[in-house]
Amino acid sequence: MSAPSSDAQAPAASFFGRRKGKRLRAGQEERLETLLPRLILPRGDTPLSREDLAGFFGFMPEELVLEIGFGGGEHLAHRAGEAPKAGFIGCEPFINGMVKLLGEVEARDLHNIRLWDADAGLLLPRLPEAAFSRIYLLYPDPWPKRRTRKRRFVSKNNLAAIARLLQPGGRFHFASDIDDYVGWTLAQAAQEPRLCWLVRGPDDWRDPYPGWPGTRYEAKAVREGRRPSYLTFARV
Image 1 (spheres, rainbow, N blue to C red):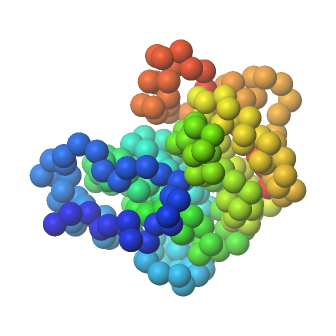
Image 2: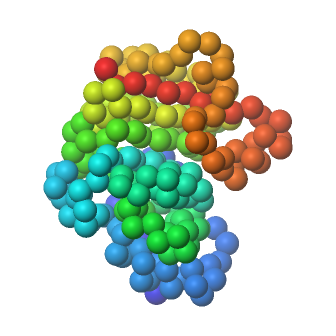
């Protein structure tokens, strides 16, 4: 049995590329069959309330945190481990990244993570308004060619959706090693009146966030000579 497929639900111009990389091992396939169905948020178009989310977690989280495109899950697992009373929702359509996180969930008994394995753009409109204290978008696909930039996740519509989901004073964190995408994000965010860039000097976007565990993609970027930027926006 393969992972639950969401390809049929994804828009024609999805924000992600391939769905699967190298062949999965038997244990990884088993996690997709048994563990993922217990953690996945329900399909469909029905809006989800805070009470619905609490029911999915099995407890009322002190705060809700969303990570869009968690890659291998290093950051999401770290944050969930350091805040067991918070509820974390992670979106990742890439199956190999999903199984890496599922391995961490199983090994560390991370009870406070719930997942979405399709395009995040399908989930955001269903989530409750002003319910999240933090939203992370870390190292998203930069779609560097001019003709593909419309597929970047950062857009007017998605930033409006993120602003809707953040509670007043909530934070949107964006990290990238692609300078063009950083500039793109600043330009797009400047047009969203509910988001304010929190910056006082260059250290505010060159230094990682407090408690930052790093990611394997970030380590690769640094090895290849690209310097990451870390932007933080507040919901006003």
